[in-house]
Length: 99
Image 1: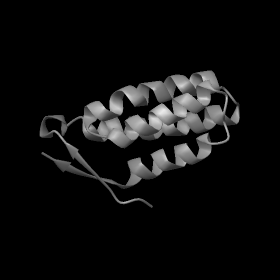
Image 2 (image 1 turned 90 degrees about the vertical axis):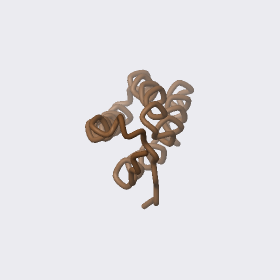
Image 3 (image 1 turned 30 degrees about the vertical axis):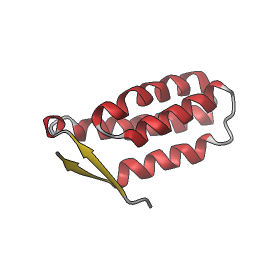
C-alpha cells in the first residue's frame, strides 16, 4: 500500500470523487481486457488516463496510463498486471489536499 498525496485545485473539488471512481472502473475494465486479451482496447483506455490524470492533479495516473499504453501497444502484456496493481493502489490510497 502506497502513501500518496495529491495537491488538487480546489475548483475541481466537486469533480474529483467522480473522476477517481471512473479511474477505478477503467482499471477493472483494463484487467478484463488483459484477460481476453484485447491490448488495442486496453491501450485506448490507458491513453485516456494518460491524458486526464495530470489535468486533475494526479500525475501518477498520467504516468501509469502512459506506461500501460506503451506496453499494450508493444504487445508486452507481461508488465501490465503490475502497472494495473499500482494504478489500483494509487486510486484506493491517494490522499487529496485541495489548494
